[in-house]
Image 1 (cartoon, rainbow, N blue to C red):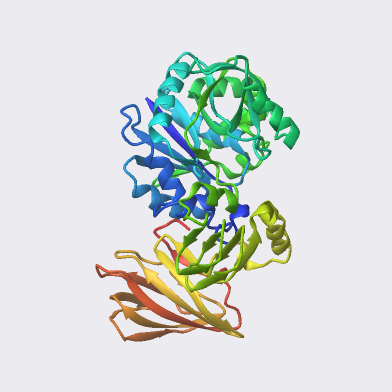
Image 2: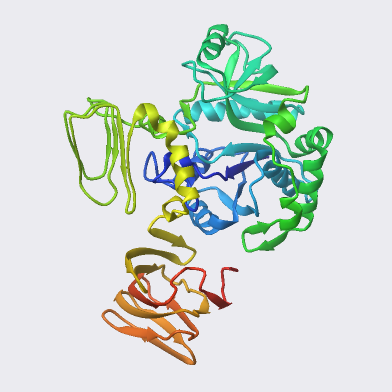
Length: 469
């Protein structure tokens, strides 16, 4: 049996302003109508060896992950929550401890959630080779056949050259090279891009981790032993995991073992690490443009333009990236998109909220979007999914006015319970316990007007919450 382990951590800052810390790129529909996480799971369908998957993610966006994986065809009833980011070696260790907890020893297929793979058939064929090698107690990595001297990836050097074999023993892992070194790698023919995809038995990985990185092994073992279950979520011990060293699987394990093999793959792979890379994997028009949304272009070439909520017009530009969101507009030359990370770091140092959240914020019950704000007031458009219910809560610093736009709401206000329909409204005084529930079959939409001395999201005191917050 193969159990995919989907790594859904990371913030994807190079795809700002669309990717945010609380809504990262793997949870966005960047290349089609489904998210990258969903694409990662969906391309595994059809394999008889795969029964279910595990997903590892940050605690902060667990509900978005849970909702997205439910829409796929592969059962994903185990979502491991990391209380802190500790890189890939500890994350995979948690998955491995979970896989062997009942005495089983499945093959784990480790996949980042934010990659594009165009040739799914060839990818699935490579997985069969990977399974065979994993069952022979090998630690397998997948090396992408390079088509250019890329300096943004690490490389894997195989012991043998040529394309006749399905796999090779690993000679060494090498860091991201400069341009001249990358060119020598391409000419050599035995170097492959490090894709970050791996395959091995859970026990073999844990044995290698215990031998070569015992501190990570011990900390992850303690964190998993302290884990609790909450619906589909596995919450590992917070203190134990935060004490774990941070390291990648490459450094902690793969570079140190003598039973690693690399399977070369030519599968139309991209890690979509920048806006320029996203342009390159998309469907461009005759002028080399990728235009998404309400875009009108004239004399525009080799550009990526994305309009979310309003018309964008480009005229007489070349090699540009234009990305518009509700609260930020990016205009950049394609040759400079790798520098977006430094801009995000600057915005973060200024505590700009545009780094963390979109104006549309997703919650387990639905989502809300900021419409307007000013001194001591804020207006939101709230959408509650059918059957969903918000927590029983109160606020110390604000009152709220609710106006139902569509749907039917059940409102708890103090000791009262009543329903509101379209064009009806109510008032929630400061300090009053209250709750909102959608008892209808269509999304409940309402306008909320908040007034008070402080309007932050941390002014919420929860008394009951079905989502465990």
